[in-house]
Image (cartoon, rainbow, N blue to C red; front, side, top):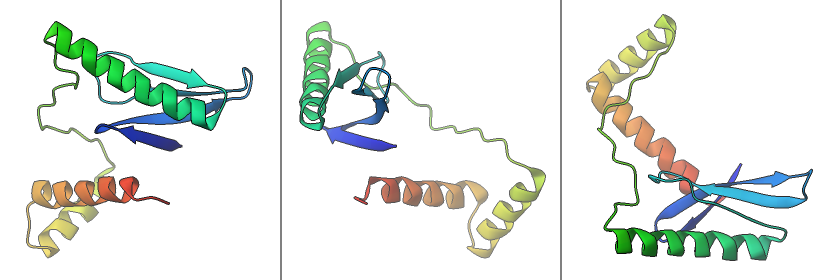
Length: 115
């Protein structure tokens, strides 16, 4: 799945073969903000317009656009994977939380790099 980014916001893009359009939804917002177009150029324009309009609306309403997050991430994994993760963290001289945070941050950065 491909993504677009504008003003610090990103959206996942899909192609709807039934309607022959590109669709997208901005991630991480307090509201659902979607957009669509039948060309790539139109999609980029629709995405940027949707983000800009949403941010303007949030300013007018005094609303925070992004979802708040607690900093707690709960994952369920197999006991075997849990053991492997704990060993990797121990070998790195870190707690599982420290090691996991670093690994997750690296994964996010890799996702942001252009293909």
